[in-house]
Length: 461
Image 1 (cartoon, rainbow, N blue to C red):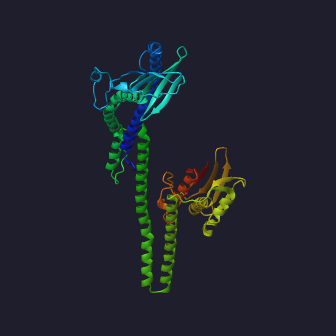
Image 2 (cartoon, one colour; image 1 turned 60 degrees about the vertical axis):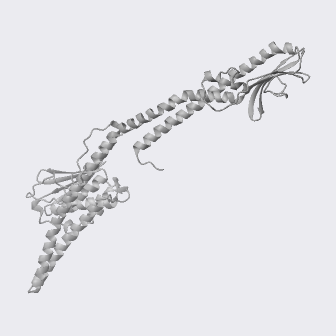
């Protein structure tokens, strides 16, 4: 059966350990008690044998009467009725007498003395020492002693179940209090577990009260062991909230950006339908082509951002930086390439680690922006330095004095300067650049310098 409750798991586990330990304790107690009783009763058997041998045998070695002499024992049968020790002590004797027996034999095989329950056959081998003998239906333990003076064998025995029964009684006497205490211990364990997992219940209630629309952090007191969970959950909620806010803003901005080119397409489509001359049709068709290109570019950028948001990327490899810049430059539209003069100063030995396709997107966007926003026929300088701590790529271009740079917002989705609305673009390029560079543990910064120059610095660790 599978247990899905931590409380039940702890409760059952602890109680199982307690019961197992109690069982082990009982087994050890029984074994130890049985061993000690064995030693005690073995010593008593030896002592009784010597007593019988010294007190009785010398008298019986010269018998004057009928042999063997039979010593009667009380005939008290077991009735399985519990009695006190005082009630067990009867005038005629004790019921346990049936569990003791003795015999005295001569070396010639004559039986001199026996208890009434001993029979007329030797109870044990005529060999000095202890013997385990099975006399149906019980196992007996005998001690045999040889007297060389009068050449007699004395043997006394005891049923083995006496020892086992006594060991069991002693063990139970010790375990019963422990067993009785098991119930209150179980209750205390249950209460302790219930109290111990209270912080988990509080955490569960706090999570169940959380509303998806709010995603507020969990602000409850928790023990040290649960603090990492609280921190992780709060971090997850914060990330989720930020992600949802970004997506809402993205959808709103995307809707706004898509609405404009779609509206323009509708207008020009209507112009084509109502055109009266070929020139009007041609003008409207060209306008549709421009709007379609802008819309295609916007959708492409949106798809790239969506791919990056879901961790899209290829394999990392060593890339020659000089070749990467030239390959990225080749992706820039030819009309933009001729708009400025390019000055590239990069050591051909510099390599960086990354995804070549993604990094081409980065530098294509940066170079594309440099060409778009630079003054006509101005110079765009691209350089790189291999420092001890990082590799730094710098792009410097001169922009129009009408554009007042807000470097704090550069890289935001759909952000475009009001003076740049006439330049083709979607406002997503630098956002894509920032995302790809963060995937490569790289940083980008924008710094305006004198005479309306913009310096873009990319650092690869």
